[in-house]
Amino acid sequence: MTPLLNIMRALADPTRLRITLLIRQLELSVSEVVQILGQSQPRVSRHIKILDEAGIAERRREGAWVFLRPGPMLAHPAIEPLFSLPGTEDSKPVLRDLARLEEVRSARTAMAAAWFDAHAAEWDRIRSLHIAEAEVESAMRTILEETPLGRVLDIGTGTGRMIELFAKGADRFVALDNSVEMLRLARAKLAGLPDAASVQAHTEIVLGDFNGLPVPDAGFDTILFHQVLHYAQHPERAIAEAARVLVPGGRLMVVDFASHDLEELRSVHAHARLGFSDESIARAFAAAGLVAGRTETLAGGTLAVKIWLGQRGQTASESPRLRPPLLRNVA
Image 1: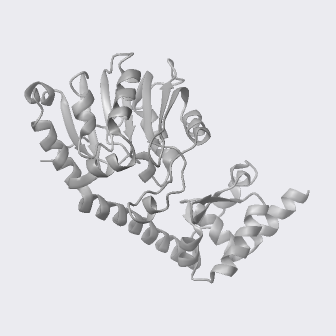
Image 2: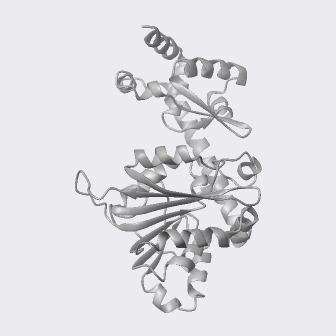
Image 3: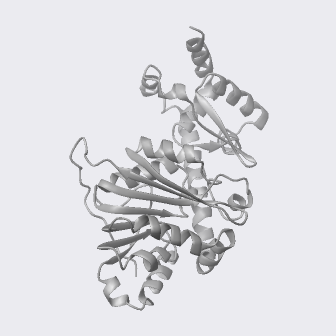
């Protein structure tokens, strides 16, 4: 009875209910919750403590920031129906909160987009400051070339380095990014390849977002997240969306930093996550229906780079539901 009483008491307060409705939509920092609610930080922190103790919310410290995400009790089948009751999400305070939440979401996106546009020309150089890319690329080649690449999707292609490395050996190569400036640089890099004509014949450069890939289900054999997942507000969702477009038996490779506390990567370089642990990637893979495979650790410099490989099961429980192809090239 005690856990149930704690849950009911926690949700009975209007402010705590509003916080709960917000974190059901998006993982938020405490300062963002304060901004949305328009209340003092000490007051909001007291409410968060109660939600945390009831298992409704979960605090996650990352560097100097504390983030709030749904706790285990929010997934309980007895609790979930409460949030679909009439009037839960259409009161004036909640509607105002949701509007402010969209402002927070837009501000995050704008910050990342502005940084990309401002630094696009030096993106490769910035990457090289963290760890030797040659070592990472060699490890990637060793793992990926054990099996034919087939159809490849490079999510967050940036300046197109993965095109240089892997497009020639692919049957089809789709390089996707949400920055037009990045895609222009990738297109320039593609045009400068020694065998540009033959590579361009099966390579597409596409504008799109990893949260909603503009490609049909089960269309790719190999998917790459090369130093891009740390920009995702919801890495688990990005991995699940990538798994959607993998064929049975297809491979998903994540190349990113191990967990670290280098705060400037968030404050200066717009990283949403300060790296990932093996456990967090394993959970994301499992939730997306991927079997975790090889894991490589490449230490060197201030940060360590990790390579995680996941594979979709050979059989699917149901036939893929194809989405209409929405690919569009960017000149």
